[in-house]
Length: 126
Picture (cartoon, helix red, strand yellow):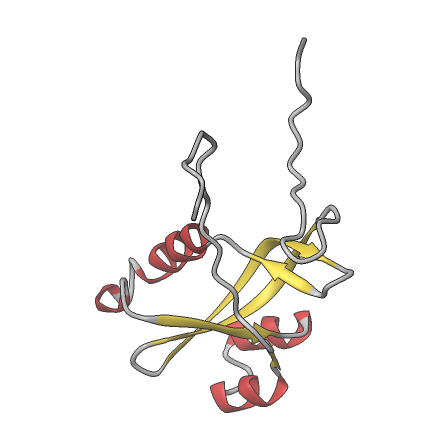
């Protein structure tokens, strides 16, 4: 019997199925570097929760800086929020300043970190 593979996952807050959407993410990288990334993420419309994998974000940032700004790869960073698609395009073209991007950004209220626990048998916690 074959299992259907599904690219959908469940929201960690409400357990409903997530959708897949692209979000223009605003990322601050130390020291004082802004990175705009149009990234496909899982999204829960019920909770208004965007779910992005850390490894995917880091590999895309490394690829983006590997040509011109290699010393910034591996620095601390914070995914601060999202932008309207039009503002993201203008930011990538250099039409608006980082200060304007920050003014127009939708700042995330919370940031959650999830750890994947491999399947298996574990002793009961006392």
